Image (cartoon, rainbow, N blue to C red; front, side, top):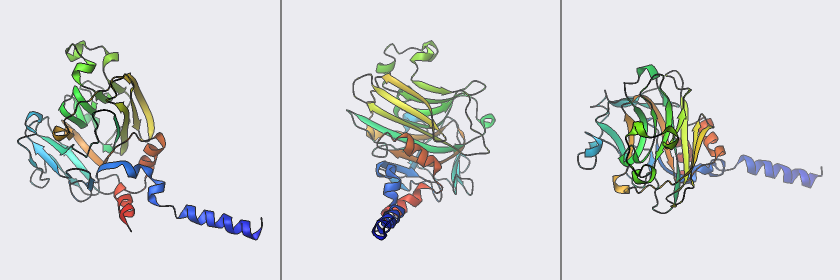
Length: 295
């Protein structure tokens, strides 16, 4: 190799090594909400309201909410020092009511005609320690669990099945408004994970992406991930979500006991590679945020 060729080669290597975090982590361009729980329950980054709120019940969330105080309500939720995926985490011990939530407007990207997105978080829990009944670590909805809702949950039977749920408007997926037990399994807009890996000893990463929502066609697609790898898909459905953004809630810990950390939302369906990159991060997303904001 000539001297000139060697010089060009080393320049390329140097420029590659100096690549910015934006190039290394393109998913950061799509971030709309992020909570690290390292120092407070307030989101580190948010396109909308960063504050965590509580309300007596879902039906009263729009008119009777107050900013959540993790010191005064420590038995329900608090920052657990040194227990996080990287640093601290949010420890939850919540019954069905009251509810804890972030406002969804702008934090959860939405468009009435066509939209996509990604939900990502880390979780640690003891399945045997979950309270009886359905248990939802995270749910995003403006009305209810079966009417325009994205969530993950554990079933109420033993052993518990972990599920990814994507319920479009009730009149779309269940125009007959049937009782849940009367809905055949193949008609339920859910992806079941019967042999889930979750324990209270290790952190596990959970994510799901969605695309072609509100197209009016049966082309909606959801991909579910656990620990950076695809765990299931759901396709070929009309995924019409007529959310009211002002009433949309990012609801944490419905009847849930366990830890949550590094919650992040994105305004597009991230790729397999990007989900794997989030899972493989050796530092919290807040470090990428700081690097991104440096001049």
